[in-house]
Length: 341
Image (cartoon, rainbow, N blue to C red; front, side):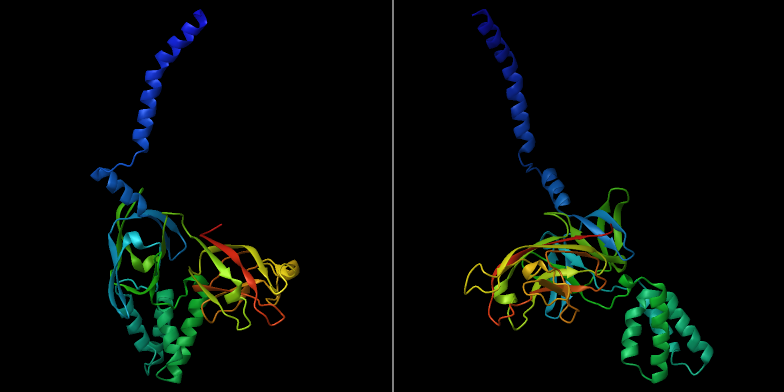
């Protein structure tokens, strides 16, 4: 009886503190609906990883409400909360286009000294002049200008990393429901960084922005063999944009039946029928990829790791059955995109 009384006294003594702790825990876990709480949540939702043209990356909070984008169908005001990833096309720094145009004009000069100066100026401008030079080389006013543009292009290629030599002008905004292609009108974006405070970031120096809400750089989807293992070699648009600088890890699981008329007899994984790995891209059942509609196909298999230097949308395809029939099943694919090692 004495022991039971002692235990009861201890329970009664501890109970108020335990109840208070439980109440405090509930209060901490409850959503903060105050104005400051909502503001803090919005800042957390807008935290992003900003990748710059030189390959460096900085974690920032984007503090503007939307991006204005000019598309072929008119202007759109895209709310920040709807954006998952933003891939920037080529944006030149202020005054760069004028310098490029002046140097291009010199390429057609009758004076050798001025022509040579034009080439040197374009090489000094570097990757910012590259798209204009490529366009000029393809549609030159004269063979002489084409030859000088070619010299400038080769010299720029010799000193600038390949991932910085870009041609795409359009910006690509990826949302949960669809992708928007156009040109962002503002030359800067408003951001805040822990060690730098409030910033006006020049878009000309930014490669892409990935919002960290829900995970950064991860994409998952299914590849239906009935559609994408057909004899017509159909390619699936994954809606994933390869930026030409980030490291990709692509993992594929699941099974495909190459002869569903007799189920289970000819099953394959994404590495290809018989586990051959599909090194030549011809093994039935192997998962293939390509960047852009005209990119060179490459083997993904069950796992691919690499840093493609080409940029564009990723398309995938399953090498079809050798017996000229439809396949069934699907592969589950996960893409993880990172920068650096």
